[in-house]
Image 1 (tube, rainbow, N blue to C red):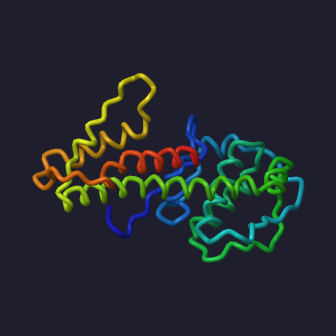
Image 2: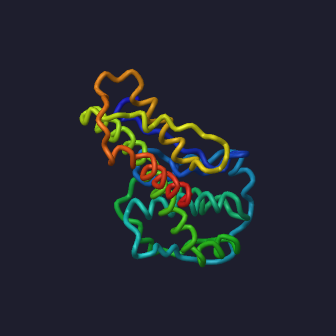
Image 3: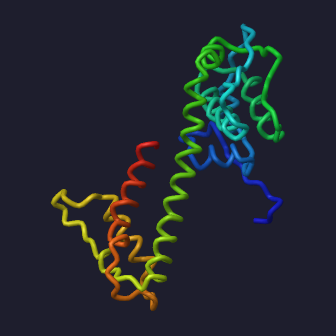
Length: 216
């Protein structure tokens, strides 16, 4: 993919779900929004109310885009009209630098209810971005730790941790040990130096993974 190509996130398709990576991609402008044609065909309600979109003041630009992406996905799952979802997708795809909407929009009762309780969509949007960033950082942490093991000529037999199945081994620690063995497999730079901080990698990185899952 060239640096000028932008991917797309399709919402509303049968059996589709909105992942944190998709929210992050749209929040950062790396992907545009597409609404599945079958989803648009299902939307037939007629607007009967006027409502203004209120963007929570504490949100950054990226978080606002994440919030609107989550809100759009919710609209496609409720008794919505075609007009409002299309308006949001067009706003996101236009790469606006500001999302302070002044005009009132024609909305259905279900759309009105979602907009009156938009804090939930904002929280989900911010959490999705946070989860994705944490997951990526956790991977980089393992890679950085592997380089450190090599630079320190460390004894990496501490990663020969096997899941005994007795419930005493942390699942995440076992996963960290497995990934570290994969990263260091065949390395000619590791050695026999017993370094306490290297021993702690399993536990510390395991805790990071647990926190990422708790955000999810």
